[in-house]
Length: 445
Image (cartoon, rainbow, N blue to C red; front, top):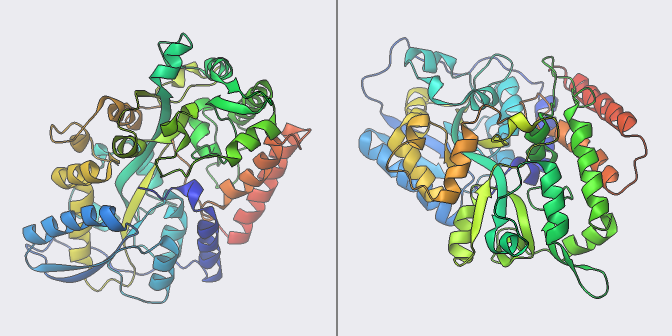
């Protein structure tokens, strides 16, 4: 799963604006029949974003569904990004099932009515949502409407180079951000000209998967209030995280030196990824990195662990950031019962979840799939299964403005890490004001 919220912010913001311009109608759309049909038949159109090898994995599960439901034909359109799918649905195209790569789109998809409310289907068929962690149940619904089901999840944690840590005298990964800072400083080496040669940990936002969202669980930092307005300025976790970042940036030589090192990074999904080449000793990343390492850096001796917790939040250690793919029925579906049968198969069938996880190396969202003996689980991958089900894990909450609240925050944290902000409290207050204005403009929470 290569598409995550922080990698697609511009498209996500534009989608939120599309929803705003279209009026945000949430009515209509198909609902479940009074009773489930004994068999489902007909053709359904399925759009998803996967390509190449990953699309082949999806097709394998589609083939299994068609074999189990011989009366249904699934027409697959792969490589379709969220923006294209949303535009097609809004234009009236009869997309029966859409797979979105970003949980940030739950708000716009539900509030616009582009994806229909699945509650009637879920209730009728007595789907056991307790199989899914509460955090995931929360990010698949918005404003009382569950218009999506979770397919697979991305889970974030700490990767560490065992050889480099052992050479520096460390036998365990850090559990607190203070420990991470100390280890990062000790593991960093410099060239004769003073530039960084090897970095213990990169603390700049925007580097690979370093994002405010991915750091937030370390200090239980909140994004939104219940009414959809910004909670960033009132959440004590954000100042803790940003002050920690300032401290470690200073200890590693300052923003300019780190930015120069970052300019030479290897492409994230290539064999030249900085962690895979040993250019950085510790890095924040998702579970999917285990698959890239197995393919591109087979000899790398590495471990994984939950990302460290901030001072005062040590009890939250073990949790992390969760996001993932979401799937729903398009409002123009001509065959909603077959569409629901397919969605239910993708998201609640243990064998399907295991096959998807084994092929894509993402975390299944069902507990029965996580504990299945058929699930391929390495020592490093197991860390992410544990994080996924940890009570302290969290996500970015759905919003009517999609990911725009994260984008707004990011414009300010970019200035903060460059040392261009003198008053952190005032900055966070401004963030609140800008997010609240965007929510008001959208016309809802």
